[in-house]
Image (cartoon, rainbow over the protein chains, first blue to last red):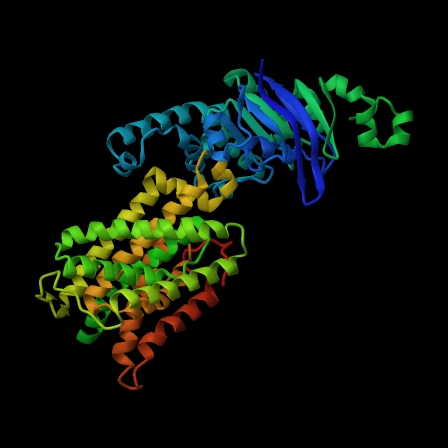
Length: 264
Length: 294
């Protein structure tokens, strides 16, 4: 069952075609990876899905609803979580406060009752807090740092907190822009494990961009390969690895002939 | 010693009122990264509206205050929606020029509507001065200070605990991330302009009650500017502390030095302190490091 459909999307910035006629579907509960050389348009696709860019042509469907013209915050409310390539945490705040912001949307109390911090709003806050504490903090193993200010944390941990914040929104689809960029081997392994666990335990669909090919091939269910804004192919990691166009895009034409089973 | 304490005490009270007006700058800057040079004029308009409600319409001040709050919120809302919304994504310096233009427009409008003559408020508070030991405090100043502190405290609590405050902090921190948390960033901009206008116009009422109101009342905004820079543009606590520092320094300089010069030291002193503090802490006392100086 497809949860997300990208339907003939085109996008250009002042004459430069960033994406041309890209289409793909993401199925409920899978890990869908988007790979491609730098400048292939990977982040642009994520930005179109989460509503920061408007495509010139084409449509985005989420659970069958057309959300091409829906603003970013409404999409988040529908169940689209996102992490960023450059960590976008709130640096002045503690880990817990950052995570609570992720759960912001689930506080149903309106402005007037939120002004009165006690009563319904307070109870809701307490319940929410408990849920977050027991669930996400445990799940991502960040118990020991919950009250630390985020700016004091190591890079790998900051990435994990950002993931926790996105998870606190209970997203149906989680968009991850280079979740392991700049991480060492151990941190990468941890993150890969978390991504798999999120898929299993929360039944969250994950769309991710990554340059770490080993991780992509290990954890993804399906892979889309982009090159110069065009979809080269998509399929299981095995299928993609063997695809001649992919080998060409990554290694060049000449090598592709001699090196068919290249290390992608 | 008596004179010293007297000067410090009344400087402290003035400082608290400055802090409220400084909040008018900070609340807007925090969420939108815009320095609103029309803050002083928001103040002046607030004072005139209050004056009109109480003197012309003969309403009780207790009805006047909430009405001014509502009016200020509408003013902030309109300014954001009609003018600044269209400036989104433009260079910072253009946006600042727009707010400077806005201050001239508001000043002109006030002169058209209320004329340029000086008007004083009817007495709002008991006239009796407050006496603490050797120190005598003007009643208008004292009650004005209390009012300012209540408003500042409300804003502080709002920012720390309420959902809107948290969402505004998130918006200020990172707009993309705020969007992806389901926060409507544009609404946050509107709300912060409304908040800023409310803080400034309540400050305007207090100042107007102490010294009367005329269209140039807004020039006090320029005096508040060093406070905002001093405290760090995006810090509410910074605005409060900066307000106290400037209030006290100004009063001490005025009391001790003005007799030796031909006046004017009072207005100069806060800027001297400002320069010294910025030499040591370029981002202000409590400001975020990334802040842009203009």
